[in-house]
Length: 357
Ligand code: F1P
Figure (cartoon, protein in one colour):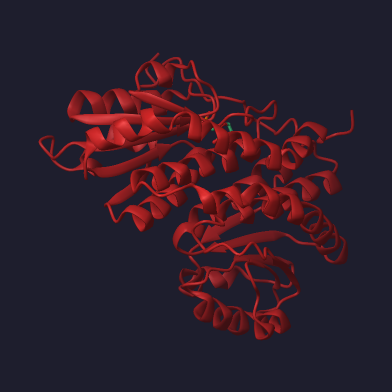
């Protein structure tokens, strides 16, 4: 088998996995609605580790937007080491939504146990596996069907579980899932274009650093894009909120920097002026967005228009394939095998989590 084939197959399997995930949400609709009603208007906390934490950042932004409920996201480790992020012990009950592809990550299981021990919290887990350590300590587990992966690096698992969290948001406000039903066909249409674009992008210049910019619900996705480049291609990569990049980090820009901007609707004019301000510093730009304005196209080197017809919150999963393929292609060109990422395992399962011998 060619190097990276497992990971590429899973990236290309996203249309099918998304279809199955959406079907799975509908199957669990009643059970989810019962849990959500039981929680009432409680605050909502997402948590996860690595990619699953970055997913939680975007999911929290989506959930707060659609429900209006105060929603935040933490790395799982923060929730059992520093319980203060959730306020006083006697704070009102809240809904905890842990995210874990495997359902076995030690920090996430410990976060659930800590929340249940310290607060009157309800736990609605998101995973790719039904029967896991996480499922055993959760009140309900929503499984992203068809998203189980052989690869260590998360790709279709990330986007499928993201869609599962979007479905949760829609069910929380009793709205039909119709906008999400557009996603599988939209990604089917854009995969080939995204792959061709990253191939030409990587063949036309050498890069030494990758910067990912995303605002609002796109910040978590920018972090995920950064992580794909690190995990698969072992390249220097960083992620920022777009306008934060001016406040110091832009000092790193050279002619061998690629800046990947996940263009939002809400911040489009600010993000456009940012690109025009940064252009003279020599970086090259890849812009991924729904429709890209001409003046931004003129200032950028590469553009991928998603043309989904969806709003900036509903179309979140569509930004990922280009970022996944960029990391994958960069690895392959270096002769690095994305299927066997250096130093990484499929699950971080800590036998002695408190680190004592
Ligand atoms: C997710 C995770 C990823 C990491 C790598 C190994 O664990 O730790 O964050 O990038 O892919 O798996 P989980 O989602 O199973 O908890």
